[in-house]
Image (cartoon, rainbow, N blue to C red; front, side):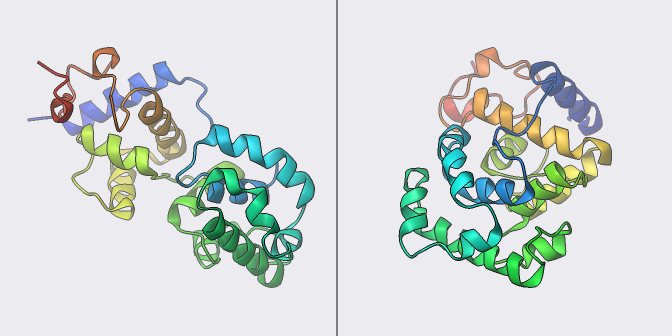
Length: 216
């Protein structure tokens, strides 16, 4: 039977060794830029988003600019990130909300952020953690996959996983732990072709690569 507290401490320790200076991969300078970049990152790599946003953030400098973008123009500007029509719609709507309801400033609470059109808990937690320093657990597809494989949760629902990790981890570690888990999911515990043979958590891992037949 796994000692969950000891296992979490081991996982956190190995994550720290792998990514001592873990930080979000998206490039941004303002809360609005981070919000837009996070929306664009859905079903897209951060590297691709970072190729698109420099020109985007010069062209659109405020929520009003995004909200007022001509039909079809914003879509073309972000086309390479995929699902560009839905993303453009979400960006326009949340930008309009910010301009109208918050004086052009991205709000800094979970309640206010999730009331913006197109903004869910994952995006809200990214903003809270990275721009407002509010302890938050960001649960993206990597965290869903890796936390399940490592036995840190039995849930599949992102909000329930968020709650499970918040219970297991000290509040001060919420931001950095989830950031490191995302990096670990991208680089080691991949959805396809997980690198179990190179994983420092391989021996004690409850999943042990069995789903891919990588552990003998």
